Length: 116
Image (cartoon, one colour):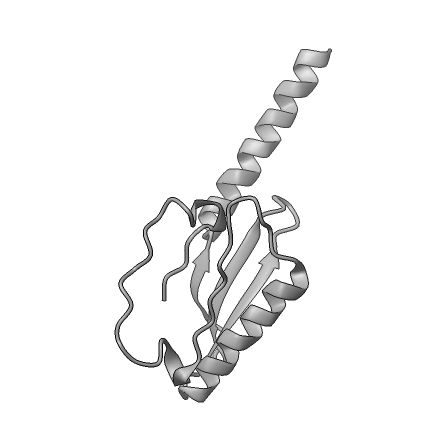
């Protein structure tokens, strides 16, 4: 599975596609977007539902979810094991979210010092 930043989608060449049905269970979930377009929450939920259906049809016990981190306001994409609840993949990682939060706090501190 290829997960890439939507804003960089136009800059990255599309991967070679093998002949066949295009994905697990015969379902290909694709979102063609230009960098200026931002999908609505309903569009994102629809695509996530398609991917989860494809995973279920392929007898994979996995679930994809997209959420927003409240402290950094960044989108988080997670792939979890439905049986154990373990997170298998996460983008951005917890470490990157902590770094982003630290940078935001640092910049707010600099802003307050500059205004004083």
